[in-house]
Length: 386
Image (cartoon, rainbow, N blue to C red; front, side):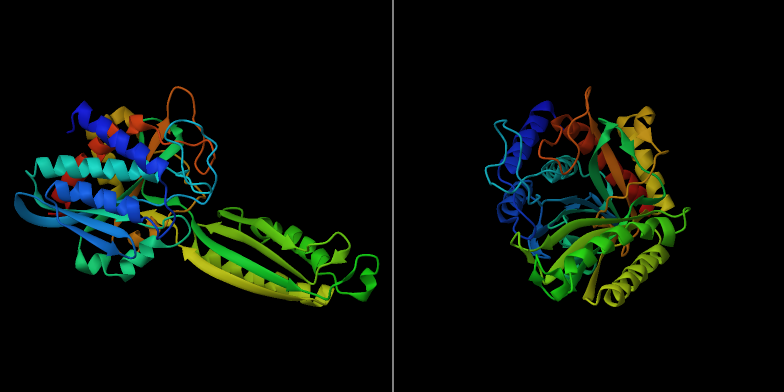
């Protein structure tokens, strides 16, 4: 594995990436920096896959199967609340999900695997752009990821506040929910606020719709299934004394079962049609299918758990936990190639800020355990695929 000085160098790189975050499909500096470090290890690197994506290849001493390890690179469009030395220097852009740490750990795995190639097969190191809501996994797949780099399995890792640092959580089946977006544009007839009877109030209709949407999970979906439908945006009006003509309602839908996805979509459509009749407005639904659920195959989840036990200790493996209703576009890769996603616990002695929080920062103490897990997993996964 890596020496302490090498881990320190990876932490320094991670902090550099945190200082200079880049949004989806704009990870030019990040990708260039990672590619430079990978090529310095004498590894072939294919750039610009699916936009700014990278794939580095580590070939073992003997021929054999191929597996993939994936990290994401993009930051979030949010302001950072931290004031430490490596805080973001780009207003409105922040590594609030730990992708800077994910990239550093996978680079560390590249260093370790390139130094000791006493294994049979090939490891593809996938550095993915645009995980945050923009479909970077699909972009890489569409650009030939799995045809240009055929592999028997693919694995992903995400740091996870709420679990003890250095612990690995993994099990077969659903790990993270599928996620879709919706936008509903409600158009009525605007009027003076003092004379509402002269218009058709789109804002009142929108208020009723927001309330009705809350019944989808409780009254449309079986209580034995999981579903979350959240309204996250409401845009309307510019003046105190004008009832606006148009209101925009936006939000997300989360689910594990595709049948639940269908039920949610149909119910949203029905609510919009009912709104037309009840309020004499036009409600237009734009439903956007984004990520399927992350479903780990049993065999590959077992391989990942075994690698975690070997690298970190059996007491560090968590197999009994609730899946998350958050989403991950690694699901798109698992829909093409079997594999597994694992969570790497991030909490130290005191819990840190959660993901997507202005006070979040990746825990650098995870770099060593993360690299050890990746390297052990690569070797075990190649042996299992042989």
